[in-house]
Length: 306
Image (tube, rainbow, N blue to C red; front, side):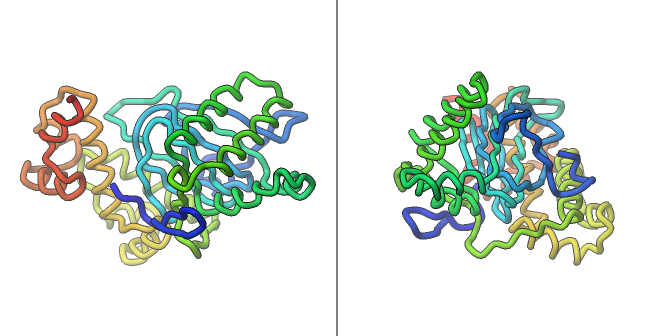
């Protein structure tokens, strides 16, 4: 699946509380610390469409799925490391089979960007922190060796004292600052302005919950629009403006993502997987799968199993 939005490379851009109680997640570090580190699985109450003032380093330890950042929707896999700027709405949707969970999916480190900017202003050696935080406003993602170095730092941080965690944050920022052009990209289009209204997050989270819980059945735009108290036309415009893709594109991508997951990790026959992903006949399933992945379900399974 192609990511939406443009990616910035080498200076040019190219390709809490529960959300029904508000878009803002309030982050409370441990007493005497400005850096918060925590790990959690999926599904989890924190895995929601939300934003917060803190900059967030984020590591995916297991599973595949789609990262939502602003109006971008991009694939992720194990080892993805990202830095999400303060105020940028974000979420990670994992591809799961029915009843499946990921007990140890995420590691998160959060810190207020103004503290980091103070450091950059006081120490000339830290000046590039400002550049990293500017890129993070657009959802900054690492790959290659840079991602592996950052992932190791985030893993080790869990066993460190508050003072060591401060040093770890500086080391993480150095990895992001020193990553070669081929190993970093931003995912949100320039000029994106987030809608931080509490009702926006509530509606997006209701939509995501509705869709992910019904991937094996019929999903009608009219029903989802009713669930968020909007007309179908207004909801369609709202969703495209907020998520960057149409509602039907979201449903198709999540259905096919589940199919890929089941083809890779289960021995279910293709005909059963077709039904689990909401397709009533094989011709439609095969056509949609080929449009999204570029091959048939059976060929995809063979390629994934070597």
